[in-house]
Image (cartoon, rainbow, N blue to C red; front, top):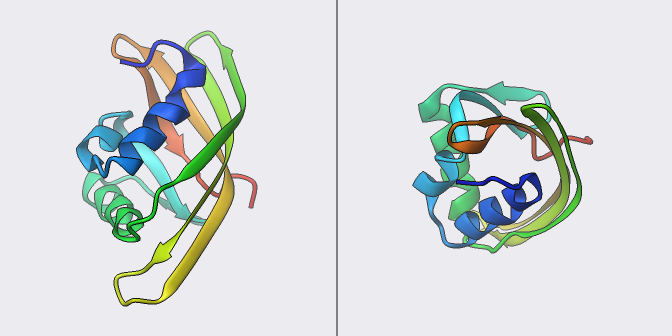
Length: 122
């Protein structure tokens, strides 16, 4: 359970680097939105899982640095810069980076993602 908002992204990144897909998904609320690329918003559990599986298939660690963790009441906005490089499932090189802008909500189970927007500033 994440009780400190500034711990949210480091915890998420550790689960990503551990290839813990279920652990990553557990950090989101049911029905949370994920933006796997600018302009494409998904929220169906199977679609989110498939999109995250693709990112994990790159077999590259994510480097993430939190810039801001802002909270008011039970809502939070976390902004972080991230990058990863690897090889896609077809063997082509992939380099991705962005600045995520994620909305989270504090509940009985700690902070949970409501909107996961890894290309938030695009």
